[in-house]
Image 1 (tube, rainbow, N blue to C red):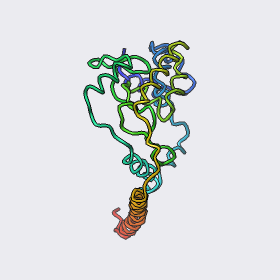
Image 2 (cartoon, rainbow, N blue to C red):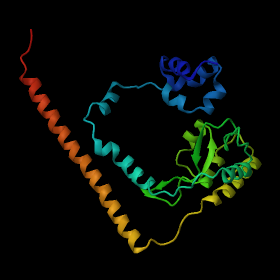
Image 3 (cartoon, rainbow, N blue to C red):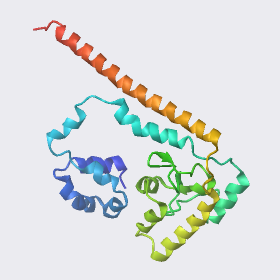
Image 4 (cartoon, rainbow, N blue to C red):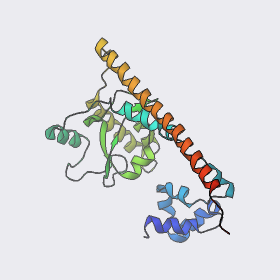
Length: 236
């Protein structure tokens, strides 16, 4: 079977790829694999109109491009974290039906390549109470980790039609039990914690303000460079 890049190269070079992909897949012997790897569809589609370049011909805004990333980082930094305890990890993995020395994806049962957070650390730009905890981390392959994205794990499992209804129910029950190891802290913040949170928000706002200031400075630099460009003598 050819590597992913080779599949993509073949798809991209064909006119009207959007319409022809099912036939290409059959010719390449990828019919089943394409359905399991939807990102190939995105890579294989043509750009279409040349006007699509317009979205790239504009100044880069640090603030607009990184505002969400900064908010996510600040919220994630508040997420609770478990200490590593080998015995606790071993017991948790065995309860998931895992061999601690040969982990497999909890969703599709292929070899695991990374760890998935059952519950997102951030919701609506705020920390949601879950974190980097044993009960919130499960072995996962990269494909499932990517396609699950921010979906609730139960909703993602419901969409795994390669599993029988009985298997989906068992996986969801097993993961619900595992998630009990990562209970949220629902206690109200103390006065001192509220004061620290306000300080934290102020720091975040200062960082965002600096990004906006950097954008303004970048615009001034571009303007100066453009002036210099037009003042330069033209060579015949």
